[in-house]
Length: 178
Image (cartoon, rainbow, N blue to C red; front, side):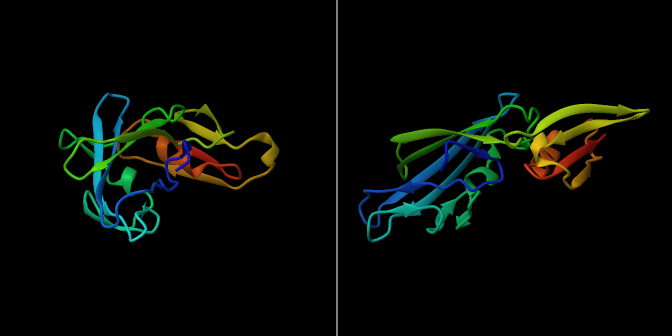
């Protein structure tokens, strides 16, 4: 997996030099901005060549089963039950630690990756017109005239940037209305 990417891009893990049929556990962990810990655990079986490739090999148990490109992130649950993973500051990445180890034993390897909600070059600015307020996520100026999306979240109160930040990109403007 690339060391940094958008939160909606696949997390691809490839493990080599395993014994054919070896069972491994991949675990992903992250702490949110309030220091709550979220975790996903899944189990894989090495193929006849001693390889596990999360893009083609299914998880055979744990937090999810099957091939799921974003499974290590989307299937995270709070270590404290009932906590909801919500990105509060889109200008900073989630730091996701992926750990690898034999099933039932401590991890032997780990790598930390960044997952961003805000695409490179996209800027965010506050807007206020009368009693309406919100944020605009703009692509780089060289993008020229681009289509726009309006995000009206409406449930929590206040602006929740994560969805609008992801909707914006190199060729699309997103506006979040509170």
